[in-house]
Length: 186
Ligand SMILES: Cc1cc2nc3c(=O)[nH]c(=O)nc-3n(C[C@H](O)[C@H](O)[C@H](O)COP(=O)(O)O)c2cc1C
Image (tube, rainbow, N blue to C red):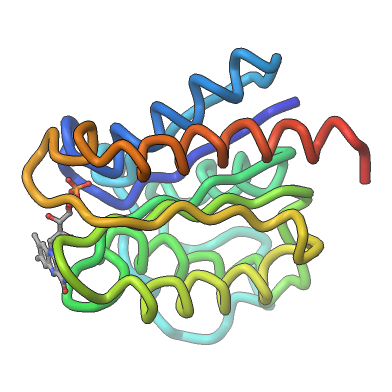
C-alpha cells in the first residue's frame, strides 16, 4: 500500500512538513510504504492556460509536474498538506493543483481510495483553504466521503507545531486512519 504526501510549504523544517512526518510515521508503523514530495524542491510551473490539453498526449510544459502527477494518480492514499498563505493555499500547492488540469481534461482521476488534508495557519484562513482543497478532491478523486481525513490547526514559527500536541495527535491519527481504511478494501 503506497501513501504519497504532497507538501506545499517551502520550509523544510516547518510545521506542515513536521505534521506530515507524524502522519507518515504512523502510517509506516501500520505497514504503508510512504513517500513525501516537497513541491518547492521541484520545478512545478503554473498552468499556461491554453486549454488545449486534450489535443496533447502529455502536458507541453516539460518540468517535474508530469511525473509527480503520475505518482499522485497511482498512489493508494494521498495527503495534501499546505500552510495557509493569504487565507488559502500556498502558491506551490496551487500551481500543482492547476497542473492537474491536464489529467482532468483527459478524464483521468487519481486512483487513491483515501485522502488526507493537513493545513497549518498562524491565526486564520483554514476554512477557505479547506474549501479549496475539498473542491479539488471532489474533481480529482473518486474517494468516498468517509475516506477523507483532516488535520488542521495553528502554528507559526518552525517548530511550533511540535508543541501543539492536539494537532500533532490529529496528524498521527490521520496517518493511522488512512491505512486502516485502505486495509478494509474498496
Ligand atoms: C506569505 C505568507 C502568507 C501567510 N498568510 C497567512 C494567513 O493568511 N493566515 C494565517 O493564519 N497565517 C498565514 N501565514 C503564516 C503561516 O500559515 C504559518 O506560519 C504556518 O505555520 C507556516 O507553515 P510552515 O511552517 O509549514 O511553512 C502566512 C505566511 C506566509 C509566509
